[in-house]
Image (cartoon, rainbow, N blue to C red; front, side, top):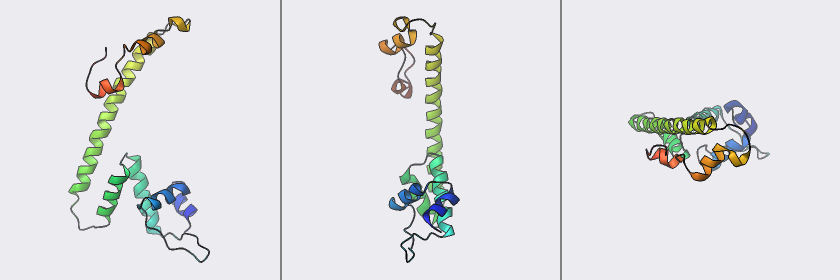
Amino acid sequence: MRTSDLAKRAGVRAETVLFYEKAGLLRPPPRTESNYRCYQPADADRLSFIRRARELGFDLSTVRQMLAASDNNGQDCSTIDKMAREQLIEIQQKLADLKALESQLRSLVSQCAGGMISECRIIEALASGTQSTRSDLAEGRPNS
């Protein structure tokens, strides 16, 4: 199958297929006499794996390690389990950070009474730094 067919089957763009091939996550396929790439059904499965792992937030290095492990069915899966657990912890932290940001923004929005920019409480709070920054939240410092 050609690049566009592979992309459609895996639910990605053709440029994505070429990117993952260049990054070494997809093996370079053989080419036809007219120099078209000729992918196999296993390439679609591999590309779907990559797409799903990326959707879950795994970086390319981790996806590469996961693919290497999946190519060796006899290997213990504890390494994959560890990667997934670490990713889960990272996502949980991001969610906590987002909830804190939501709370801050909700507080800013609630201070808005309309009127002129010169009297805008949101602009005032942002300019004076009375609200904690995202880095404050990540380091566990409370709102000011």
